[in-house]
Length: 359
Image 1 (cartoon, rainbow, N blue to C red):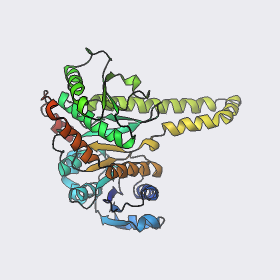
Image 2 (cartoon, one colour):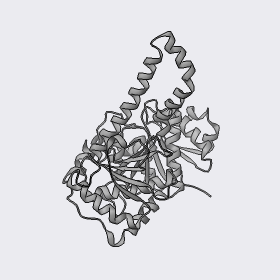
Image 3 (cartoon, rainbow, N blue to C red):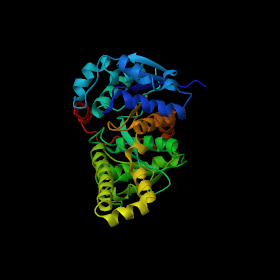
Image 4 (spheres, rainbow, N blue to C red):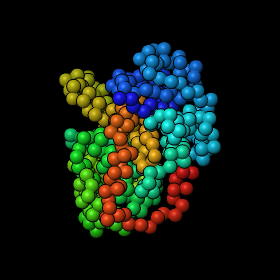
């Protein structure tokens, strides 16, 4: 069966073409039915493909004369989008020349370009940024929103929960993911009015959907393994994500310092090396790379700018899975199932969407 092409912004990421092309080549070995559209400087892409004949045979190059820098504001990036590798990759999805786009470039610019080009799905007010985080359980946890929307009302949070559950069913193979709202406590009376309203709506909505709503969770429980989807506004979610990532780096650096502090420590490291290697692999962000903009009329995946080739390959793998499992159709189907439960109007945060896009 022929599957849609994946457009790769080959200029995105800290190391640019070499890592993006190598990552796509690694992913192609796992998803050999997919074709690729590599967008960026044609000469550089052709040179990188010389080392990857398998990917070269399955790829087309779309030359882009410009790139978007990591420091560029979203508003500036929007004005130059049609001539940049990022903008052209997303527009390939809009035009139907690709089924999805992957970029390791500027997150704010990618969100702004994607929102303008693809628009939100019917029934979704705002897209959300979702990512996988490691846990102590059998499956990773999906967390959203991670920064696309700094202010959200109850309606937005319910929509995020529905999209996150659909995503979770694809990447974790769970039939009914456990969904919780991020809060300052687990008691029903805790949190803002929007959080409490969202919880009440989700209790009703969950009855007709393939998800289990488990109330609230706190930030220290995100990676324990007892929740599959954590839902938050983008402001709180981004802070929680960076705290989790920072703690993981802290633990890694602390272990490194402890094992190199003395000769006895170095000997201890040799004995415990299998365990420390397992820990390092579990905490390595490259093994969980690939954040998704959920709620758009097309699939756009954000790779870490600092991702290795393996990290890029994981982002492409996520993209391929979402195409294979028809993510957008699943979300649309879940929205349709809401039926009489509906979604409350909430109190929309006026001007928040425009503010988010401009920052």
